[in-house]
Length: 228
Ligand SMILES: O=C[C@H](O)COP(=O)(O)O
View 1 (cartoon, rainbow, N blue to C red):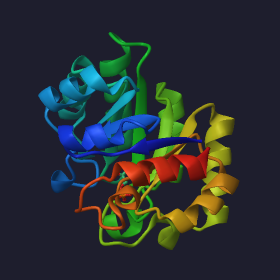
View 2 (tube, helix red, strand yellow):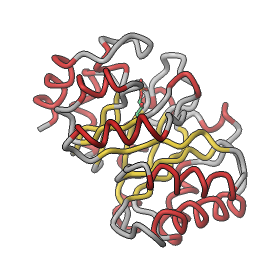
View 3 (cartoon, rainbow, N blue to C red):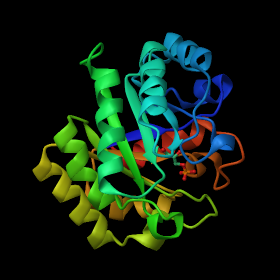
View 4 (spheres, rainbow, N blue to C red):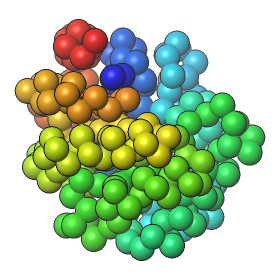
Protein backbone atom coordinates (compact mmCIF):
# COMPACT_ATOMS: atom_id res chain seq x y z
CA UNK A 1 0.00 0.00 0.00
CA UNK A 2 1.52 3.32 -1.09
CA UNK A 3 0.91 6.66 0.60
CA UNK A 4 -0.17 9.51 -1.66
CA UNK A 5 -0.10 12.95 -0.02
CA UNK A 6 -1.81 15.98 -1.58
CA UNK A 7 0.08 19.28 -1.11
CA UNK A 8 -1.55 22.48 -2.35
CA UNK A 9 1.65 24.45 -2.89
CA UNK A 10 5.37 24.18 -3.54
CA UNK A 11 6.15 24.79 0.12
CA UNK A 12 3.76 22.05 1.24
CA UNK A 13 5.29 19.72 -1.34
CA UNK A 14 8.64 20.18 0.43
CA UNK A 15 6.98 18.86 3.60
CA UNK A 16 5.51 15.90 1.66
CA UNK A 17 8.58 14.49 -0.07
CA UNK A 18 8.76 11.47 2.23
CA UNK A 19 5.43 10.22 0.79
CA UNK A 20 5.42 7.53 -1.90
CA UNK A 21 3.51 9.75 -4.35
CA UNK A 22 3.24 13.57 -4.28
CA UNK A 23 -0.22 14.56 -5.51
CA UNK A 24 -0.40 18.17 -6.67
CA UNK A 25 -3.82 19.74 -6.34
CA UNK A 26 -5.61 22.97 -5.49
CA UNK A 27 -8.17 22.16 -2.79
CA UNK A 28 -9.72 25.65 -3.10
CA UNK A 29 -10.94 24.57 -6.59
CA UNK A 30 -12.59 21.35 -5.41
CA UNK A 31 -11.94 17.87 -4.12
CA UNK A 32 -9.75 17.16 -7.17
CA UNK A 33 -9.03 20.80 -8.01
CA UNK A 34 -6.24 21.35 -10.55
CA UNK A 35 -3.15 23.37 -9.72
CA UNK A 36 -1.08 25.36 -12.22
CA UNK A 37 1.23 23.56 -14.70
CA UNK A 38 4.23 25.57 -13.46
CA UNK A 39 3.55 24.34 -9.91
CA UNK A 40 3.44 20.72 -11.11
CA UNK A 41 6.66 21.28 -13.08
CA UNK A 42 8.54 22.78 -10.16
CA UNK A 43 7.43 20.08 -7.70
CA UNK A 44 8.49 17.42 -10.20
CA UNK A 45 11.93 19.07 -10.41
CA UNK A 46 12.78 18.47 -6.74
CA UNK A 47 10.44 15.73 -5.51
CA UNK A 48 12.53 12.74 -6.58
CA UNK A 49 9.29 10.76 -6.22
CA UNK A 50 6.43 10.03 -8.60
CA UNK A 51 4.22 13.10 -8.98
CA UNK A 52 0.47 12.95 -9.45
CA UNK A 53 -1.69 15.84 -10.62
CA UNK A 54 -5.43 16.25 -10.19
CA UNK A 55 -7.08 17.93 -13.18
CA UNK A 56 -10.45 18.74 -11.63
CA UNK A 57 -13.91 17.53 -10.69
CA UNK A 58 -15.08 17.45 -14.29
CA UNK A 59 -18.48 17.84 -15.89
CA UNK A 60 -19.12 15.89 -19.12
CA UNK A 61 -16.53 17.75 -21.23
CA UNK A 62 -14.33 15.17 -22.96
CA UNK A 63 -12.36 17.77 -24.93
CA UNK A 64 -11.59 19.97 -21.94
CA UNK A 65 -10.74 16.96 -19.80
CA UNK A 66 -8.40 15.52 -22.47
CA UNK A 67 -6.57 18.82 -22.88
CA UNK A 68 -6.21 19.23 -19.09
CA UNK A 69 -4.90 15.66 -18.80
CA UNK A 70 -2.38 16.26 -21.60
CA UNK A 71 -1.29 19.50 -19.93
CA UNK A 72 -0.70 17.76 -16.60
CA UNK A 73 1.32 14.99 -18.31
CA UNK A 74 3.41 17.55 -20.26
CA UNK A 75 4.04 19.47 -17.01
CA UNK A 76 5.64 16.33 -15.59
CA UNK A 77 2.91 14.44 -13.75
CA UNK A 78 3.50 10.68 -13.65
CA UNK A 79 -0.10 10.09 -12.53
CA UNK A 80 -2.97 12.09 -14.05
CA UNK A 81 -6.12 12.05 -11.95
CA UNK A 82 -9.62 13.16 -12.89
CA UNK A 83 -12.84 13.18 -10.87
CA UNK A 84 -16.09 12.39 -12.70
CA UNK A 85 -18.65 14.80 -11.26
CA UNK A 86 -21.57 13.85 -13.52
CA UNK A 87 -23.82 10.84 -14.09
CA UNK A 88 -24.30 8.39 -16.95
CA UNK A 89 -22.14 5.50 -18.08
CA UNK A 90 -21.95 6.49 -21.75
CA UNK A 91 -20.83 9.99 -20.87
CA UNK A 92 -18.29 8.61 -18.39
CA UNK A 93 -16.87 6.30 -21.06
CA UNK A 94 -16.38 9.26 -23.44
CA UNK A 95 -14.44 11.23 -20.84
CA UNK A 96 -12.36 8.26 -19.67
CA UNK A 97 -11.50 7.31 -23.27
CA UNK A 98 -10.51 10.88 -24.11
CA UNK A 99 -8.36 11.40 -21.02
CA UNK A 100 -6.62 8.04 -21.37
CA UNK A 101 -5.84 8.63 -25.04
CA UNK A 102 -4.60 12.16 -24.33
CA UNK A 103 -2.06 10.82 -21.83
CA UNK A 104 -1.12 7.42 -23.25
CA UNK A 105 -0.63 8.34 -26.94
CA UNK A 106 2.42 10.40 -26.04
CA UNK A 107 3.26 9.10 -22.56
CA UNK A 108 2.43 5.38 -22.45
CA UNK A 109 4.46 4.99 -19.25
CA UNK A 110 2.26 7.42 -17.29
CA UNK A 111 -0.70 6.35 -15.18
CA UNK A 112 -4.30 7.48 -15.54
CA UNK A 113 -6.45 7.53 -12.40
CA UNK A 114 -10.23 7.79 -12.72
CA UNK A 115 -11.91 8.94 -9.52
CA UNK A 116 -15.50 8.59 -8.45
CA UNK A 117 -16.94 9.83 -5.19
CA UNK A 118 -17.91 7.75 -2.16
CA UNK A 119 -20.68 10.34 -1.61
CA UNK A 120 -21.82 10.02 -5.24
CA UNK A 121 -25.48 9.90 -4.19
CA UNK A 122 -25.41 13.39 -2.70
CA UNK A 123 -23.12 14.55 -5.57
CA UNK A 124 -25.58 13.19 -8.16
CA UNK A 125 -22.60 11.61 -9.94
CA UNK A 126 -21.69 8.16 -11.25
CA UNK A 127 -20.85 5.44 -8.71
CA UNK A 128 -17.21 4.32 -8.39
CA UNK A 129 -18.45 0.74 -8.97
CA UNK A 130 -19.75 1.80 -12.41
CA UNK A 131 -16.57 3.71 -13.22
CA UNK A 132 -14.14 0.86 -12.60
CA UNK A 133 -15.11 -1.45 -15.52
CA UNK A 134 -15.12 1.55 -17.87
CA UNK A 135 -11.66 2.59 -16.65
CA UNK A 136 -10.35 -0.94 -17.24
CA UNK A 137 -11.94 -1.18 -20.70
CA UNK A 138 -10.49 2.19 -21.77
CA UNK A 139 -6.93 1.37 -20.65
CA UNK A 140 -6.79 3.54 -17.52
CA UNK A 141 -4.71 2.24 -14.63
CA UNK A 142 -6.54 2.99 -11.37
CA UNK A 143 -10.07 3.44 -10.11
CA UNK A 144 -10.20 5.81 -7.18
CA UNK A 145 -12.69 6.76 -4.50
CA UNK A 146 -12.59 10.17 -2.79
CA UNK A 147 -15.22 12.32 -1.12
CA UNK A 148 -16.66 14.95 -3.44
CA UNK A 149 -17.89 17.27 -0.71
CA UNK A 150 -15.23 18.00 1.88
CA UNK A 151 -17.37 18.58 4.96
CA UNK A 152 -15.43 16.28 7.26
CA UNK A 153 -17.49 13.16 6.51
CA UNK A 154 -15.15 10.37 5.56
CA UNK A 155 -15.39 7.84 2.74
CA UNK A 156 -16.06 5.29 5.52
CA UNK A 157 -19.31 7.19 6.30
CA UNK A 158 -20.56 6.35 2.83
CA UNK A 159 -18.87 3.03 2.01
CA UNK A 160 -18.07 0.56 4.79
CA UNK A 161 -15.05 -1.74 4.98
CA UNK A 162 -16.85 -4.62 3.25
CA UNK A 163 -17.91 -2.38 0.36
CA UNK A 164 -14.42 -0.92 -0.07
CA UNK A 165 -12.90 -4.43 0.05
CA UNK A 166 -15.37 -5.52 -2.65
CA UNK A 167 -14.43 -2.47 -4.74
CA UNK A 168 -10.70 -3.27 -4.39
CA UNK A 169 -11.25 -6.94 -5.27
CA UNK A 170 -13.38 -6.03 -8.29
CA UNK A 171 -10.65 -3.70 -9.55
CA UNK A 172 -7.95 -6.33 -9.09
CA UNK A 173 -10.03 -8.79 -11.11
CA UNK A 174 -10.45 -6.12 -13.81
CA UNK A 175 -6.66 -5.68 -13.92
CA UNK A 176 -6.56 -2.15 -12.51
CA UNK A 177 -5.35 -0.75 -9.20
CA UNK A 178 -7.36 0.91 -6.44
CA UNK A 179 -6.77 4.26 -4.74
CA UNK A 180 -8.83 5.14 -1.66
CA UNK A 181 -9.14 8.61 -0.13
CA UNK A 182 -11.65 10.92 1.51
CA UNK A 183 -11.02 12.43 4.96
CA UNK A 184 -9.16 9.32 6.10
CA UNK A 185 -7.81 9.47 9.67
CA UNK A 186 -5.08 7.56 11.50
CA UNK A 187 -7.73 5.36 13.14
CA UNK A 188 -8.72 4.09 9.65
CA UNK A 189 -5.28 2.66 8.90
CA UNK A 190 -5.95 -0.82 10.34
CA UNK A 191 -9.11 -1.16 8.21
CA UNK A 192 -7.24 0.19 5.18
CA UNK A 193 -4.52 -2.42 5.66
CA UNK A 194 -7.18 -5.15 5.66
CA UNK A 195 -8.77 -3.69 2.51
CA UNK A 196 -5.28 -3.44 0.99
CA UNK A 197 -5.71 -1.03 -1.96
CA UNK A 198 -2.59 -0.16 -3.97
CA UNK A 199 -2.75 3.51 -2.88
CA UNK A 200 -4.29 5.53 -0.06
CA UNK A 201 -4.59 9.28 -0.54
CA UNK A 202 -4.55 11.76 2.32
CA UNK A 203 -4.41 15.44 3.08
CA UNK A 204 -6.38 16.22 6.26
CA UNK A 205 -4.70 13.33 8.12
CA UNK A 206 -1.24 14.85 7.62
CA UNK A 207 -2.44 18.43 8.29
CA UNK A 208 -3.34 17.43 11.87
CA UNK A 209 -7.02 16.81 11.09
CA UNK A 210 -7.91 20.06 9.31
CA UNK A 211 -7.33 19.88 5.55
CA UNK A 212 -7.35 23.68 5.39
CA UNK A 213 -4.30 23.78 7.65
CA UNK A 214 -0.76 23.04 6.41
CA UNK A 215 0.84 19.65 5.76
CA UNK A 216 3.21 18.61 8.55
CA UNK A 217 6.33 16.67 7.65
CA UNK A 218 6.28 14.78 10.97
CA UNK A 219 2.73 13.53 10.29
CA UNK A 220 3.68 12.39 6.77
CA UNK A 221 6.46 10.32 8.35
CA UNK A 222 4.13 8.98 11.06
CA UNK A 223 1.58 7.94 8.41
CA UNK A 224 4.27 6.23 6.37
CA UNK A 225 5.56 4.34 9.41
CA UNK A 226 2.01 3.15 10.23
CA UNK A 227 1.37 2.03 6.65
CA UNK A 228 4.61 0.27 5.73
O1 LIG B 1 -6.29 12.49 -2.94
C1 LIG B 1 -6.41 12.68 -1.72
C2 LIG B 1 -7.21 13.80 -1.17
O2 LIG B 1 -6.54 15.00 -1.29
C3 LIG B 1 -7.64 13.52 0.21
O3 LIG B 1 -7.84 14.69 0.96
P1 LIG B 1 -8.48 14.52 2.41
O4 LIG B 1 -7.70 13.44 3.12
O5 LIG B 1 -8.29 15.84 3.10
O6 LIG B 1 -9.90 14.16 2.21
